[in-house]
Length: 347
Image (cartoon, rainbow, N blue to C red):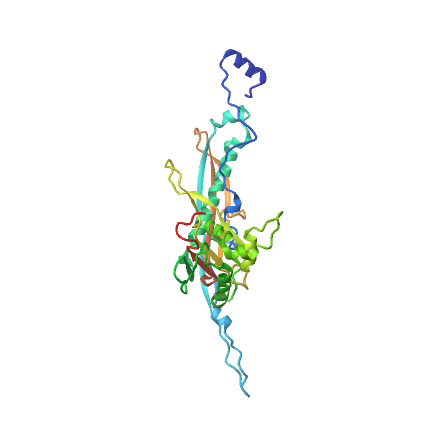
C-alpha cells in the first residue's frame, strides 16, 4: 500500500522510518546515443517474405560493353549477350532474454517509485539497446572488414605511398580531397558508379577534422560569430559525397563480473568508402544490402515481447528477437581504408 504523510510522520516518531526517497528528475543511465549506431544508416534495409532465397546479379562487364556495330549490307550484326548470376541470402534469428521478479517489483509499485527505475520499462529499453549493439557488431563484422572488399588501401606515415597505400589522415603530407577524388575515378572503372557514402571510425574522423589540407580549404568560410568547423557535412561536400557517418557505437568486451573493457564496435582507425542506393532497387547496383525477415509475421524484423514464467516462480521475461542477413552485393563498390591514422594515434 502507498504510504501517506501521516504514516511517514508516525514512523519517524517511532524511530523506525528509513528513508528511501528517489529523485524523479534525474537518473544515471548509460544508454548510448542512437546517433552513434551505423547498422541502419549505410546500406538499404530489404524486407523479404521468406528467410532464404536467391536474387539475380547482372554481369557489369557485359552491361558496359559496346555491342553496337555497323550493319553489313544485306546482313545483320551478331546479337549482344549479357549474363546474370544467382546470389543467395539467409536470415537467421538472434535472441536476447532478461527476467523480472514480480515480488521484488512490488516495492517500487507500493512506494510510488519514479518511472525511470520501473523494472519493466528499464528492461524493455535494455533489450532494445542489446539489439542495437548486436546489429552494429554484425554489421561491422561483415562490412567494416577489409576481407569483404575488392579494393583495400593501407595508410602510411613514412616513405612514399605505393599503389595500394595512402598518407594517414594525421600526416602533414595528407591531402584527403585529392586522394578521394582519385578513389572516385577508380570506383567508376571497377564498379561503374561513383562513391556516395563513407563510414569513418572515430579516430579517423577526428584526424580529418584536424587535417592541415582540409583546414586550409575552409579557413575563410567562417566568421568570429560562426567560426569554420569541420563537420560530417563539410567533409561530405569536400569529398563529393552524399553522406558521411561516424561510427561511435561501443560495447563491453569483458565477460560478466570482469572489469569493463569498453571498445568501439567499428575499428576507430579505419574507414569505408562505398556506393549504395538509398532504397532497394532493381535498376541500380549497391555495395551491400541488409536483408530482414519478419519472423513473427508482424512486419518487424526486430521484436520485443513479454511473457510469464512458469507457475509459482512469480517471474516475467522480456525477449528480444531480430532476424537479418547483411550481404556484400558488390565488392567492387566498396573501398576499405585500413589504418587511416598513424599507429598509436589517440583522438
